[in-house]
Image 1 (tube, rainbow, N blue to C red):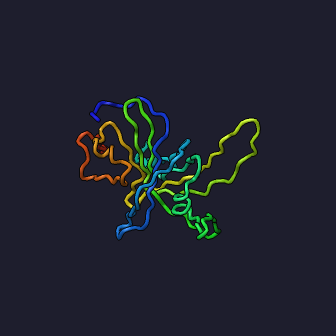
Image 2 (tube, rainbow, N blue to C red):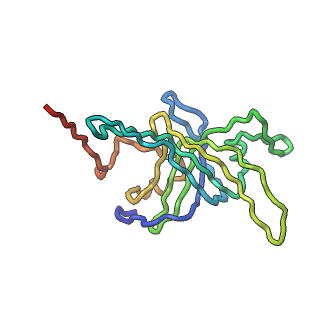
Image 3 (cartoon, one colour):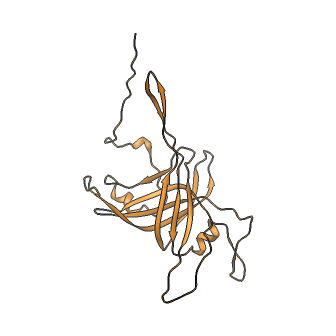
Length: 208
């Protein structure tokens, strides 16, 4: 995608994927398993947690404390698939093919991928460390017409040990990286920062 082909709007939700965190290395960084599709995406609403706080000195804002506490929200899907239920939600499948849940089940952490449509190109996202709660069990009798009952996963996305929370593609993303987005969990390399990155230098004002 050539730089300059910028999206003006976004809409839709598609291509939700997940990759389980199977372990952590010696530096505390996650080791991910293979990426899986989570079909039947209906809606995603995820809100930023943590607000900036101002530190006042010299009769003004002297420093701004950035409190990034990750994200929380809901992912609505048609039906939780078997692999997600067993590998992430901690449910178990017995020898007779019956799925069951115990009060000692432990949910696993995972990376969450998804895509928003855009007027120029789709925007692809990844959250690096998520947990999901069990969906509610509900349905209703059929009356004059059938109504599809969806399932909602409550999500929490937190930072990795290096502070990394999420990443997304944009108009500057290389084609190869964009096309391979759902094949593995992308990790940014800060030693390869773009020359287009805007930096702001602080000015230290002293009074003699």
